Length: 174
Image (cartoon, rainbow, N blue to C red; front, side, top):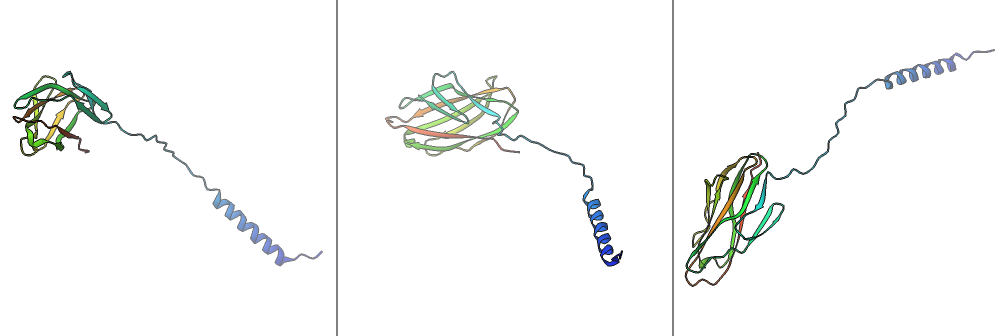
């Protein structure tokens, strides 16, 4: 019987290589896993219907009021038109987004914001007879607290028009 050393050497080399590859591939790893459920965070402020007898429609972050009226040449005040409640301590800004319709017939539209103890927290001039007012910034409401928005509407003498107002409550993201 003849032994083929060349062939056996190739076979041994192949076997040694296979053992080395198998040893390197058999390395052990430790693992950590992180599973996360991700959802949408709710807003820290929510609208609540006021006690002012207005028609209020609340859909998520949007509140629509109807029934706000004022006499021509006079002023009407809605002391609790709508309320806002905080689920966490929150700082927010209140500003005028738009005034459309017949604002030239308006004497003024003022929105005053009162805390739960009826302390005045801010006054927003929505319309002063010729233009919108400056934003009210850095209003700080405490978790669980409810504030009310008072509207004061003054039309000019002989006014016959109507006005649409859009206010924006802005919550800065830290």
